[in-house]
Image 1 (cartoon, helix red, strand yellow):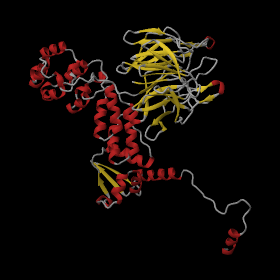
Image 2 (cartoon, one colour):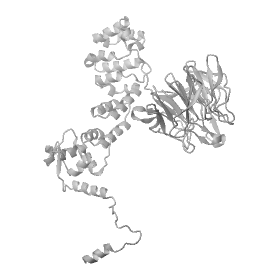
Image 3 (tube, one colour):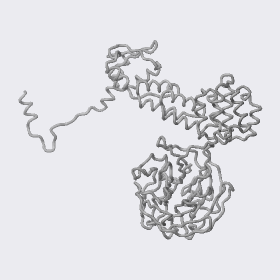
Image 4 (cartoon, helix red, strand yellow):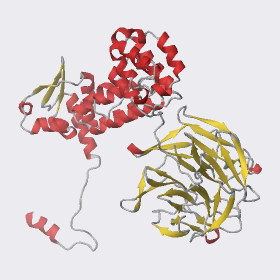
Length: 575
């Protein structure tokens, strides 16, 4: 029989047939863990018992060691628990342990509002990193103005830095709503101190910050008066009118109960300490905002901003008006959306070209209508110069414009200034050295390489040096005293550009710069924290959600987090 078997394996094999074959059992791991979990439930072959209070939990060491680095070290590194049949665990709730053991066998756990506060600390103790992160994400998704302060303290207690940053940012952005909830009144004074120190609270006036402080003190005057002066010192006293302080000094019980607070405000009213008081206005944290545009299906009203410390984008309230081919600019702490176009309700009505303008107020997290332009402008170029918004060129169905309008947010009115020498749609625009530059664009007949410069002092336009590449759909930024022209297209050549050029106003010359990693027509661009960022665009096939940043140290373009939405013809500004 042996020689027969030897003959079977040694005889010549058919052509093309391998002399070995790997067999894999389908779903082996899942089936094995299912069997082992059933053995645990049936209390068979278990070799470890955990005790939490009066409850015990049976399991298999090897399964728990494979899931938890903490337990693996306990069982294998010579600790006394490695030889114990029963181990008492502290710091973990019994109901959480039941979930965690089941998680070790199945890789699944149902996170709920009832169990997340038990699961997260237990997952941290057992070093179940992915589960802890899932619990943090769950809490972040359920954050609102009634619980953000509790989540903030919970995240701090259990070393969840990402969740803590999210809670801090939420509290700062929603401060006016947060302080109206009981959770605010229960804060420890050290937590309130951290909040009042923040330069970026979203408030209209410093009076709102003082009233929040006062409501916290008055909630438990006897206990909190001792901490009142330390907190009052964080209020930006000079930003509040003196007549307000005169009334508060006379009427508020705090200034009678706290000698330190009494002396502090009295000294201010007498002008004794005014030079040493903090006068910095609280302003929202600056970041990149991107608005509107078009994806592969529709025009967009959506808005999102970049969370730099987490390299991600978050969605914001949408604009009141759907807009693609929209331009954006930031003035006086507001993000303006200017013009653009959108689909009409019925296809036979064609495209609606917009005169309308609106702005986003980050303090109130809302869009507000602003005065409309005189003309409908799609693919207009927008630049901010001397705290005024310039809307340059653009188009409607029948023509491209030479005309330019200027908006002063203080006067709340659009005025016309002299026309450019050349009609331009889809141009880029920026302000530098007190002058307005308009770059490229197209007038239906040709794509331009020409560049014009407007000097507000003499109210005239003049042509300066041409770019090397004629293009429309070009984005522009100012960086280190140069103008950068980024991406774009030439319709007549069917070219979509990754090209970047830069212009030196001193020498009136253009030179090539490092190309983008990807062609982009109708992207948007901005300067943020000293770097150039380019968002979205169209590469000839697809509308993009990708974002690039120029690394000035390594001198190359790098990808950062994708936007939430695919966008071409979008607007971007830093606010």
